[in-house]
Picture: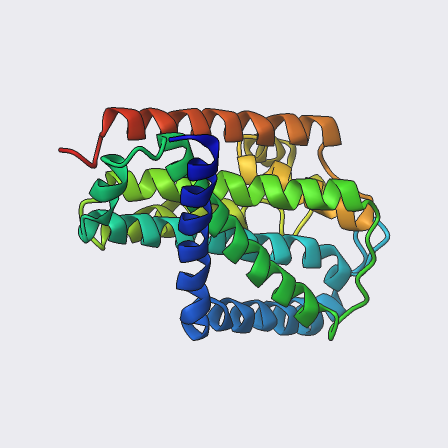
Length: 257
């Protein structure tokens, strides 16, 4: 395939992925917006009003960055894992694999679809947040960078889950037993400085902690983690997962077997 044909194939796949979640927006966009709205009401207003400020910010302001990023994480992951698994289930993926379309473009197409859904839901959640607090951006470059990188990372994670899934039940195991616990323990609702030293050390092994704190720095200018360390961890995970996804596609593991 020449460059023009590759771009056309990539654009077609991305368009399909975006139209897929946009067509069923009642299922893909509305539920996470309702859920995060409840977080703002319960944790931000009802509980947060009884808590003291953290790092000079009200509890509501402190948790907003994490809640927005949590919505991005969950939806970027969910979009790719469900879409790619359905491609396997319906044998649509086989048609792409035998086509001249390079594997890295197939992977990129699904990832961009996941990023698009994650950013769409994240933007809507941010708009909802303005009804509960004022949103101020400390650093737009940091904010946009961490949002994009995190959405890419969890889109890749969803891709790996979909490749290894052998049934519809398998695509819910990782989100339920891995993703949700790591997200809730990633410092969304608290600062790790509030934890005993042992649990602070344990928390440093949670990669989502670095993403949440980078996001919080982008919005509020405060972070429990050095910003350079946070971005190094995120980029490392993106590179490793992208390479692994491409390896799985090139070898056909979970697809051709």
